[in-house]
Amino acid sequence: MSHVQLYTDGAAKGNPGPGGYGLVLLSGSHRKEYAQGFKNTTNNRMELLAVIKGLELLKKTCTVDVYSDSKYVVDVVEKKWLHNWVKKGFAGKKNVDLWKRFLEVYKLHKVKFHWVKGHNGHPLNERCDELAVWAAENDAVRPDVGFG
Image (cartoon, rainbow, N blue to C red):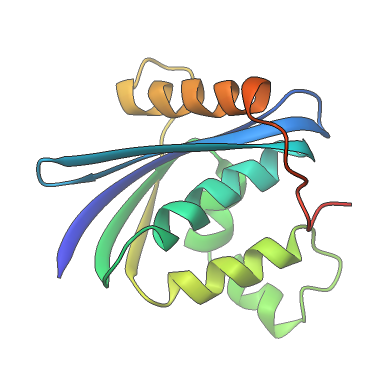
C-alpha cells in the first residue's frame, strides 16, 4: 500500500463569501498541487473540501497522513465525533453533504489526521494557504452547490 502525505487548507473572503481550497499531495518523489475556488461558501466547507478532493485524487488505496490547520476537520474525525453524528443522522450539523462525501472516500483509505498550527511557517501549510487564497480571489466562479 502506497503512503501519501496530504497537506490541505481552505479560505473564504468573508464567511460566507468567495472561497477556495488548496492541497499538496506527496508520494515518494511525486508532488501534485491542486486548488479550486467557489463564488459563495464558508471557510469550514473549504477546509473539508480540500481533504475530500485530496483523497478523491488518489487512484488506489493508500495510507494517508493528512495535515490540516483546521481543528474543525481534524477534531471531528480524530475525536470520533463524526461516528456519533452519523448515528444521530447528522441532526443539527452543518456541511452534511460534504461529511457524507468525505465518508465515501475516507473508507477507501487508511487515513490519519495531524493538526498543524496555521500561519506558523510550515512550508507546505503555507503553500496550501497560498493556493486556497489564490483560488478564492481568482478562481471563485463556480457555485458551491451544497452551500446555502
